[in-house]
Length: 117
Image 1 (cartoon, rainbow, N blue to C red):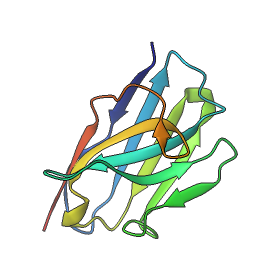
Image 2: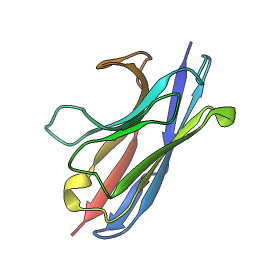
Image 3: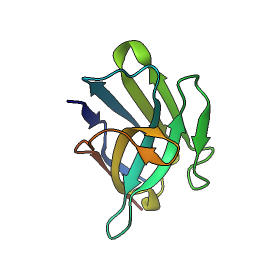
Image 4: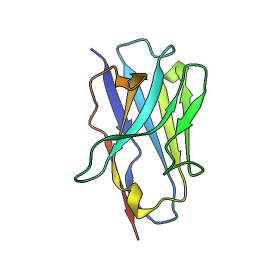
């Protein structure tokens, strides 16, 4: 059974930074593309960034230039460095393995990010 554990969220003022981590257990990690997703109150979950097994990255327009996704295969961990945070980044953040637009594993509990004005 694959388990995803996200951490690193918290309360931060606008303009601040946070680094999120997501560690996977119970499955092969190295050959999977990994994505960070977020779900704001009253909204659908959306893809924020992803990284292929080769290290190619994608960013949603709303976070481009502010967020950086990276991965450490030996630790089965994917990171999301978030800089210049805005109140609209407030959401619960999740990670998952992905293939095209599909996610592959059960969702973890996520980590909450709250950005105050």
